[in-house]
Amino acid sequence: MYLGLMFMVLSFALIGYAKRDMDNLLFRVEMIFMTLMVCFRYGQGSDYYSYEQIFRVQKQYPGIYSYTDEIVYGLLNRIAGDAGWSYQLFVAVIGLVCMLLTYRGIMRLSKIKTVSALLLLPTFYLSYYFSIMREGIVLSIVIGIIIPLIIEHKNFSAVILICIMPLIHQSSIIMLAMLPVILTDIPWYRMRKTLVAISSTCGIGMWILLRLSHVSIHELHFDPSYPALAIRIVMFALITLLFDRCEKTPEIKKMYNLYLIGFCIFLVFFSAALFSNRGTAYFKIIEVIMIPDMLGNVKRVSAADCRNAMRRTLLAGLIIICMVEGIKNLASYPAQLDYSHEITFYNYPYISIFNKEQEKLYYG
Image (tube, rainbow, N blue to C red; front, side):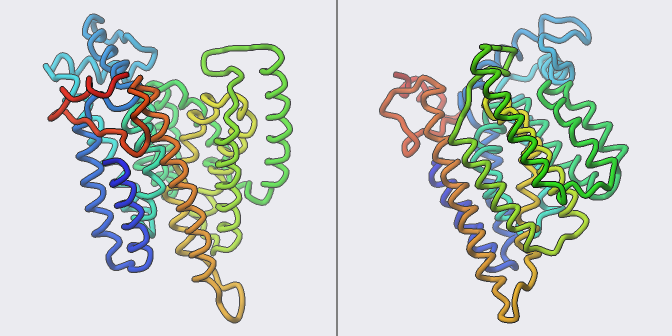
């Protein structure tokens, strides 16, 4: 089913890109399908049962006290538990909220919504919305509320929300690095070569430090993922090429500045893969809105006007990256769930609350 979902989203992106009058309809269709999948899932994602434990234990804590350090998320569990909800109902409601917020952000800001869905699918949807629920909630708030607030220059509201996010997941404290972009009009994109060079140098230094010192502070420990580094660099290069070739509206400039800061943070901490990937996801999700807007704003580069060829080339590169990320993620899920070795990306099963008894058939 997951490969079928990927094929559907890819097909809709190509159709929506070529026939813009069908873009909204196709986007709504795929969002309904994706919402049903995330709401009715059972046992999907490496953290599914960890979150169930939090849900069950939270009931034992009185008042506003929380089993987790993230007070707001703990209170959500407590409220749902006191209301008599099952964990499956809680998961479904959280999934629905995440998808509604995502739908809101894409509908309001994206120029090619089916391409946004394609960019959302391989990591944000399959990994965060399906598995890492607390970060998934924050990411959906970023794309559905915070980015629109920033674009609309409602900076005070955006800053307040950013400050609240660590109460849902602690890693989102890194979003405070967005404040210099939100609160100033500094053209960070003009300094990108310097920023990337400094960040790369710091990243090499961090690699040496973590490699030799064996430091381990929560998620900050030596665990580099060179494929992830390669994908991020290629993606940044494609986005920067697109940025240089598009009409730089104030909205695109602001989003690119935020994305640039996130990429620099990733470079500094690339040797700690878990920390760098999860911590900078709040910046990376801007791709979902920014890339379609850039594709829709590629400017004339010659008398012959080769905009369409450039758009197609860049879109092809983005599709390849999305497919590689999607297959890579699907290939990792069976091992995370201790499934049988026969289960891999092409036969990784979707299990719902309607056939949950089949889950035990896939364990090794």
